[in-house]
View 1 (cartoon, rainbow, N blue to C red):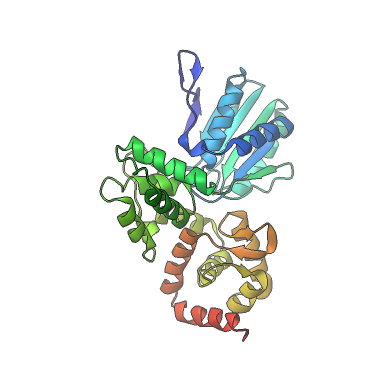
View 2 (view 1 turned 180 degrees about the vertical axis):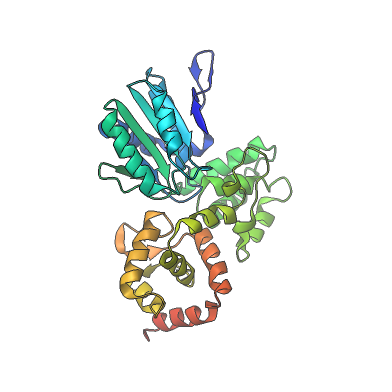
Length: 337
C-alpha cells in the first residue's frame, strides 16, 4: 500500500501522539536530529517495540513544515517496485517513510541507495527489525519502554477499555510485574489490557506467569496486522527473518534462565550443527534484531527478553533438544563445561 497525506488533522491541529510514545521523548528528539543530519535513517528493534509509532510521529512533525511526505508499508509486499512508484509521484524535496522493511533489507538497501543518488532532495526513514546494511545508513536502535512508562501505558489502555486498574499499591505492583513479564513491549501491553475486562490484574498475571503464557495473548479487530494478533505471531515473524543458524541458536539460548556470557553461549550451544564462529555471527544477528540484549551496555553479557525466550523454548522442545540443553546449562553453571 502506498499512502500520501497520511497525517490526520482536525481544525488545522496535529493529531495527538500515540500512547505508545509515552516516555519516548529522548528517542523522538534523537530521531529528529538524525533526520536533519542523515538522508537515510533506520529505526530498528524487536517486533512490537513501537518503531512504527515513533516513525509516524517524526514524519508528522516533518509534514507540518510543508515538506512532502510519502509513506509505503512494506509488510505485505515481496518487492521494492512500490517504493519507486511512490517516490516518482513526490516532489523533489520529500521525506519517504518505508515502514516494516523487514523482509527485503538487501534489495531495499540497493533500491534506496539508487533513489537517494538520483534525488538529492530526498530523505528516507525506515522501520525494520534489522538494519538494511546500506553504506550511508544511520541506525537508531529502539529499546523496550522503561518500567514506569510501561505501567503508565498499561493503565491508560485499561482506562480506555473501561476497566481502570485499582488505585492502590498492590495493583501498581501487579501492573509492574505484568509489564516485566511482557518485556515492557507496547504491543504486548495493549494485548494484555484487552484481557482485563475478562479477568483482573492478579488473574492475568497468574496466566502470564505460566510457561509460554504471554505468547497466546491475542488482539481482535480488522485493523490489527496478522503479525501483531498474538505475541507468538509477532515473534514468529522475527523467526522467519532469521537465518538457520540464528533460529537454532535462539532455541538453544532459551535454556538459559537469565544473564549469560558469549563464552557460555559458545560452550553450551556448540556442536556439529553450530560451530563457535557460527555462534558468534548468530549472536550478533540476534542482537541486531533485539532478540538478545546487552546487559549494562557490556558486549560480553547477554540476556534474552522473556517472551522471546518463551518462543525459543517452544522451538527447543519441538527440536527435541530441551533436556540436553538444560543439562548443558546446568553443567556450565557448575563449571563443568
